[in-house]
Length: 477
Image 1 (cartoon, rainbow, N blue to C red):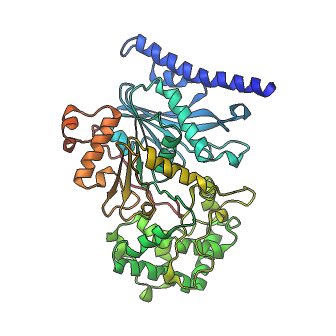
Image 2: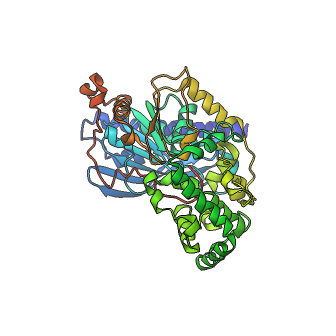
Image 3: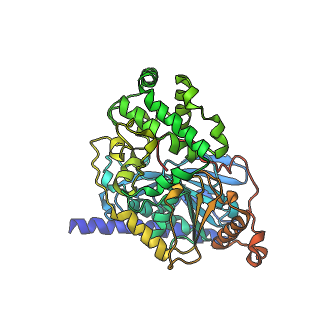
């Protein structure tokens, strides 16, 4: 009986969240254009919403906020945590883009590509369990794709009463995966989805698609040069590990999570080829040293620049514990053969379990990604997947089946993990832009008549429109 009462009280709180937001928006509308309450007051009227700071930006209002979320959306009475979100406000009469990176939220004003295309507002969410958006104490069993999708659903429900126009969800890499999972569990929330370079590891133990990718990506000359440096880094393990030990001592790196310096060193080296293609272009191959004539320092510098020797230290892993936990419980992780290394590799591609503290239990759920894959193939509606031709994570993409409607998979030629609509071939670029405008409800009449006329509605802004993927250490999307 007491549990039922707690559930009822929690339900009242959740309904109150929606009702209060709706009442605020209605009051603003009733007061007439320009006479309603300030947007900050409207947003902060949502129960559980609090302001961290407001940062000025020309033409926008930008807020960093906390929103109180249930730790477990199935049992909201069992506790809450504060989740950081940001709001780039333009106008309640414009469409809204719901962006997530799948990791921490950027607390500086930024526009995702769809936000620029539709000239709209943008809500950005920090993924649960990335600090500071982590429950305390942290029950890691509550970190799964359904709980995260429910975070988004609850934020959308609270803000939709203020931002009544169309909504589009988006994200790149793990953010693109997040947008896809959100659509799978809450398909009625969004008016469209734009998922960039989102890997789709349907069967975790079957990774031959990645092997085929690395056998043909770029040119043979480039592949041979990269493979040569990677192999040489293992041949010269002893002198290069001496450099690693010195760097660790200088920077205070420790290796208790992965086990020891040797395991960390090999993990960095094995990421080298993957990381090159994820963040670099074919034109960058000329910067890769020739292994046979390279000095130890040149090998070290190349591996450090591309993979990052700090990556598998405890300090490097700590921020990304939530990702590795998810990779080892639901998302899956790649395991490639790399035959050019022969017997030089002692550990092979190490599993995510090696990168998560041992006091956090992990059990893999093989049915989760298969369920999402089936749903996308049979139910995708107004979904756009944009991949990069030379991006390793795009080797296992989402595909559309006969049940998909008004949905598309497009590939940017020669692009890496920073692939976007702007890098598509001309015809696909126009179609993708037109579809985003259409789904957002702001396609001009000329675009409705001819998709080739589709262009972003917002003016370019070098500071806001930073679409390039930032180089990050470690093998992760």
